[in-house]
Structure formats: C-alpha cells, structure tokens
Length: 493
Image 1 (spheres, rainbow, N blue to C red):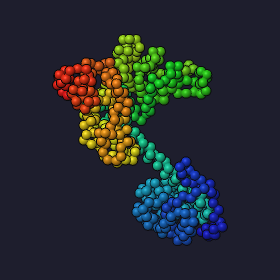
Image 2: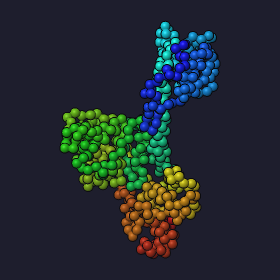
Image 3: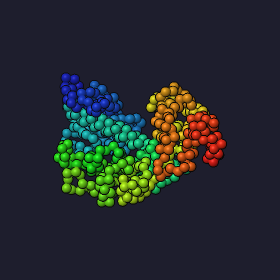
Image 4: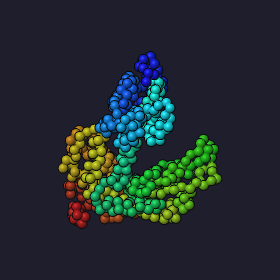
C-alpha cells in the first residue's frame, strides 16, 4: 500500500499507451475518459486508486464491498471495474461473475497479492481482462488501465463500424431487393413473384428482357438479394462498354506478363463474382468470339485467366439483360443460338411504363421523397394538375425518364408542391422534338412491337402535345378528326 503513496513526481507514464479514435482511426497521445468502478474493502486503496484515475481524466465510482459494486453495475453504465479478490461476503471472483452476467461489455481488472499467482490465472480464466499485484507500483496500475482503455476503445470503434456496416447493408438490401421495385400493377406483382421463384434456385441462369430505362438492373439486384447468394458479391458489367480486345482479360482475368500492360495478376469479373451473382447488361452487344467463351464457362463453371495454363473453378450465377430482341439477333447471325438458349433458362420480362400506368404516381412520389431528402427541401407532393399531367404523359424513356423529370422539377422548384408547370418532359431525355413519331416507334423493342400498341401510344402522345385538342391532334397525326375519334374510342382514350 505504501508503494502507492501519492507523490505526483512518481506518476511517470508512457505517452504511447494513451489512445483515442479520430477520423483517421487511433490517434496517440490524447486522453480518453472512462467511467471506472473501484471495489475494495480497504478505503486507503480505493482513495489512492481513485486519485490516480481522476488525475488521468477518468470518472471514478467507489464501492466498499462486492454487493454494492454489483448494484452500481446493475444501475448505471460502467466501462471498467477494478476489484480486489479478498473481500468479506462477496469476493472478487463472485463480483467478476456477476459483472460478466449483467454487463458483458464492462471489463474487469482484478487486484491480487504478489504471492497469489493462482488467483490471477483463475481470474483470467473466468473472464477478467487483466490483473495487477498488491502492493503495486503506479507503473503497474497505469499499464493495466491503459491496456484496458485501449481495448475498450478498439471494441467501441469496431462496434461503431459494424453498426454502420449493418445499416449500409440494410439500406442496400432495401434499395436492391423487391422493395426497390415500386408499383402495384399486375405486371409488377407478377414480375416480383417470378423473381422470388427463380431466386430460390442457386445456379439457374436468368435473362431479363426490357426496354431501355425500365429498371433491368434493379430486377437483377432483386434476384441476387432474394437468393441465398445475397451475402456474396453482385458484380454488374456493361458488355457494350468493354473494348473488344479487353473482353477476355476483363471477364477471366490475366497473369502478370500475359501481355504488354499486364504488370500484375488481375482477377476478372467471374472470379470477383465468385459466390455471388454476375450481371451481364447489354448481353446482346457481346462479340461473337466472346459468346463462345461465355458459353463454355456457363457449361463448365471454370475459367482460365489470360496467360495461365490452369483453370479456376467459379461458383457464379449469371444474370443477363438486354433491350434487344435476341431471337431476331439469332436469326441474323449476330448472336449465337446455343448461348441464347443457355441464357434463356428463366426469362423475366420487365414491363414498360406504358403498360403500368397505375404505377406512375407511386414511382413519382417515391422519386420526389428521395429528392427532398437529398436536396434538404420540404417537398410535400404533386398538385392535382401535376398528377393528372403525369398520368397523361407518354414515357418512351420509361422509369428513367420519369425519374429525370421529377428530379429536374425538384431542383428547380421551391418547397411545397410540384406544379404542372414544373414538369418539363421535353428536357429530360425523351427526344421528343420534330422527330417525336420516330421516337415513339423506336421506344418499342422488336418483340413487343405491334400496330395496336404503337398506334395507341402515338394517339396518347399527340393528345398530350395538343393538350387534348382533337382537331390539332388529328392534324399532328395527319388523319381526319373522325379517324382520330374512332381510334380513341377503340383504345378507350
């Protein structure tokens, strides 16, 4: 006890033992404040340790016996408990057990006698973080405290990082699962059912077909998120954006020295997606020679990096997407028939927005809520006129066009409601100028194109552009008003 006579000239501490977490992680030479409970039936020891800890910036609570100490831990948050072993009624081992039971995140340091090595080992076996001997020097006490403080800070930082990671994962799953597919139309409900059905399989290849802007990647992410592969990687690849001479290296990787610029080993998309899902967007734009290699990987589930003689087994589900009519591409020779059938094991058709008109307002409100949050604005919704305009609008650019229109309106308007005048569809990438008829026709894929569907959309767009004026709409289409009215009656417009 006398070794702890408090002469501050003896408080020589190692600065490198102090640590705190900052923006860049652990920073040294800064003080960390902890709440420390000191339990000892010797008042002199409690006082001496308390003064030592207070001088180091810690908050100290004292307890004269084990029962009182446990009551403190049960009633308030304590970071560290320092307890003597030999105490009447409740000894230090019982304190240790009780603390570990009621507050598992609280670390316990045990004070033992110099000749009580067995007690020290027993305390560590039962869950104590550290110990020091009595009588002790301040250096021993300081070392035990600093080791415990360092561990506490590392664990708290780890918990904080884990919490942020868990939140991020939850948000990503919310954005990439079925919840990301906004809408209640029959077409969307049917699509969600199909996603759940194919997600329950493990290796089944999926082909997603839909027009530009319909959200094919969201569907692919939903297949991944709803499957047992959700914990694995999701690797999206735009096949149309990879130069032809880099296709093999991009997909299968390469070894150092395989070609001039191969300065190190590089994994390809298949290896990066191992255990997860590889999403091949715009699969119809893949060169024929690469189609042969892709077919072999799908059949053998092995890849060979460029410059390597060894094959690597990969566990990957392939999900492909296209806005082209692959059946037509097969007939004209630009897409291999065997690969088409290998990819088209389970097809999911993503409906264009014109086939899910009832979802337009759901989508628009969803996009507006996101914009309000990102812009820090109080945007409460759309006016009645704006909602009517949204429901009348033809969206050849599909969901992407709607999203762009809402985002533009949110940026330009103030707080409150989005008015009809805030929505300008001619400036959000629909391409509707003098070539609007051509644009409408081109918005249909070859598989979906039929005269009634195209005619109906042309009528809708003509009426929108003339604000419902039938005479002007008929003139715009180059037909008589009677023909226009007959067509409107036929399509229920």
